[in-house]
Image (tube, rainbow, N blue to C red):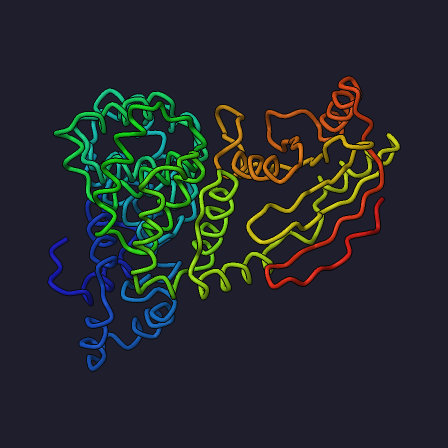
Length: 454
């Protein structure tokens, strides 16, 4: 494709998509990815671009500095590429995949299926950067494939020394998004960080991503690599952004490392960072949960007042108040068993909502049955991911005994799991079902009665 301007590219893609080769499609998409608002301003006065600008500018406000071509245009490129995928070299395939990932557009048709299958069959024909970019793009596009994850894990584990820290972190991020726990890859990654020469190549953002990724997958990190991560991360804290500091604090709290100097120092760095006042809701929730986990570990942490207020507001606003079908099913099973309970009991900001609350007789512990959806369970090990295990820790520290009803393709029906929980409690001499009074407590001191048991 010998195009000298964006206009020529758009003309060819629109008018001749059906006869484009694989190389043409790759190049066109990459050029479009790099189209900026400043370039659009320069093109505004050119009459031949009027038709295109009306489509392009629809996406400028929502996507910021990068332009996202219209869906029809991208699907047209995909259709042309899919028909001629056999003409692509590995570099062209990786460029095409990365382009769609960068644009967050999963094209219609089977192009991504074909590419995933090709990557799965022979990962070795792609350069390490291409493997990282393609796998990262598949995760952004939510193109899940356990067999692809397994193939990428094997390849990257065997060639970890060939990948840069950023590439490894992109791969780790993709595994988190796929909820795939890559045990061999993680072992290789931990060996990587124990090598002082390799560890020195990590940037501050890499250490933050590593801590967040390990915590998200809910893995148990051995003492030696964890100590190395804490030491290196502590040295890099001053150059981390506020979001990275939030990810570090949350990750360390999930990994039960709140008593380490890096945790307290990350809070100090956050207090000095002006970006703390503009954190997105996800990060605010992470901070509040990290603070609660620190308190449960007897570590004194105090969030800045504005941050705590904003986080508490979002925690209340996003607390689950509508039972799911699984909640209703568990409740119905308990009712049939004669077990009195309450659905969705809010405790306080920073603590998880109790999905199904039971209480045993006398001084026996309160029982929480937590409904764990597919997004909180690993797709390959069926184990709880980091957030779910941390919430169980918080409930235990608050005087509850947590159980889980897991909703996944590997799990028994919810009613069967519920019956097993009740049976287990009874075998242990507990009699679940006594009515109890609970009060919803907010951070500002307000309380609200939580009666109305089923």
